[in-house]
Length: 222
Image 1: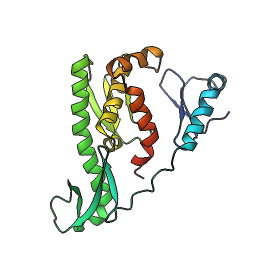
Image 2: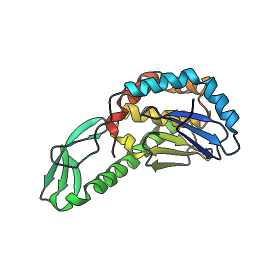
Image 3: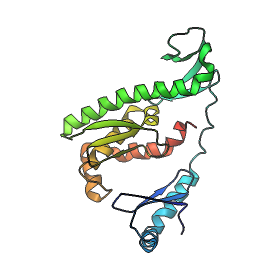
Image 4: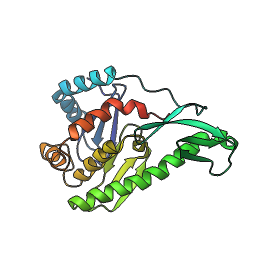
């Protein structure tokens, strides 16, 4: 079994990632040998095959947005229709529907991304602060990423990274990703101890995790 790509970094362990299209990505430490990587692939061959089958069975991603009138966009799990209006300020806002100024048609994509990022920063900071305070996590900073397939990550320095695209998902799903990354501050891997901690904070995390896997294709942007 050969991976589609091997990405080396300063990480300490080898991680296997099955992409939405079924391709296998390996994240490995700089010094990891090909023999070590192959051993990991062999050890998890059944898991890889299962995940690739699941990926290929999922619905095809939504086509890239064209930013045309009547097109629908997700925000917090709800879809809103895009309308063009004559108003020049604000250039884009959500008022029952997404309303975009006719004068800004050429800037539609960048304006949407800016809007999503503004909302994501506000909502993510609120949710991280809520759970961090409730369960005693020490978070230094919440940062936005533009990752396409990775919803979140964390660092040993106490930084929580969340992709702005996650703001398209329902709030319970955002909360799951937040709790997931907060638990990584205490357990840096996906061990049984890690999942036990997630379950203690969010007993229904499996349902939320399953929902995200099954609906991730709805939040495709490009």
